[in-house]
Image 1 (tube, rainbow, N blue to C red):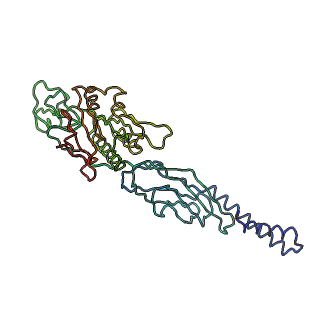
Image 2 (image 1 turned 30 degrees about the vertical axis):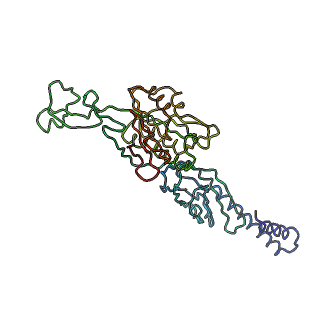
Image 3 (image 1 turned 45 degrees about the vertical axis):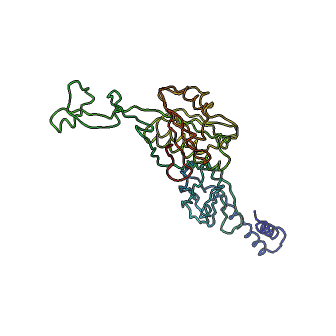
Length: 392
């Protein structure tokens, strides 16, 4: 209650209780009646007011604009002449569009919408909501804090990947000449029926149209899962531009995961980075899996990951959980590995799998020094849209 409301209440009571004139007493009664009606007005409006978010989780990539939507409804039978809704975006920049002054008729519904530009990777909290309103006379202002929060997840920047290779495919489905590995989800052509073809191959629509039996052929492919080993141990990177280099490496990992998931490939993640904001130091290990939902789980982990200040060895981290399944490819991303670490990885994988090294270009070593026999080495470039470059 404001000071002027208290003063009016005191004046009204004084006139009613201590003044002997009826005219003056009726003035006091009028003051008390108006104050009672104003109080009832604010209470009824408070009971019918609804302020809620339309989305509890927002997702975006870096430099993408997302819209926050808040639904505001006056469910009471009384109009609301003055209402302020203020969302709390924390460190996110919104200009001043996150606050709005409005008036609502009885039963009216409106929205507060504002944009946020996702400038940096991470997980952000938006909220709570601050709501202020008052009765028509402004005697009983009400301030409410609504603990309705939203979560904004900003994924790393995704680059279009075109890996320079000399032969074959860098990852994913590998074509083969054997029909044993035909993939029924990848159509190739229709040919005339040959004695011995299975019934499931017969294309009845094409056979009816052409007047003779025809069989369907699919592309023969082999599905190769990929495990991404992301090194985010701070001590393995040069101190100069460490933040920029680790962020570029995280972008590279996210781009690889997106590229593989888009090709319906199984992919997993193991990293020495830690999830930001947790009480315990958690270094994620996400199993190899398929589907966009699995890929989104990895991208959300990469959105919240940060460098590890402890001296964690990425190769030991990978090997402590045992070897991956047969034929799994391992993509290492991070600072250059010593020769003994590469040898340990090759021993654990054998000749059934493939190891690729994606080294972050920190500009302090020549690539001739980093060449490794039997292992393809790529550079994660320091800037630009071309993310990877094959070692010359």
